[in-house]
Image 1: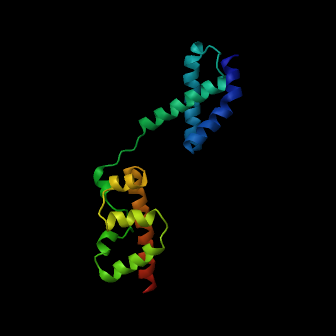
Image 2: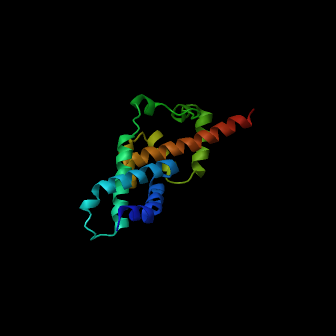
Image 3: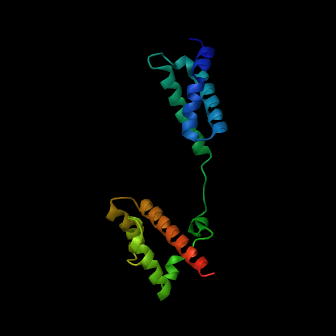
Length: 165
């Protein structure tokens, strides 16, 4: 089969595969084009023992990974330590008696695992690594779950503050 025929027959499939990886039309098209460029350079090494589409998908996947490595976003540590705008520093608010009681009331009805992760972190002062181990998960999972719990509580606290206005 000529390479032009391979291109005509499989470009749409490769593009859809790339679109599934990237969720971005122009980027998917760029990676699909790159895939066929790399396939053209390597076509002499293709022995035909595998499905052409599978071979192209493998090249596309590798091109996508290469793109991700080239465009990896790095975030300074200082930026990671900052709270996003609009997030109430809940750890500081639990020191005030009335606010702490309001947070406890909200926590009482909060869904798991958010309630327990938040309680273990703020009131139990456990590190993320130990919280993750308790749930059989990673420290990263514990961080994300804690953050999501804080967002829920923060939104509730903001709503309460606006009710008083």
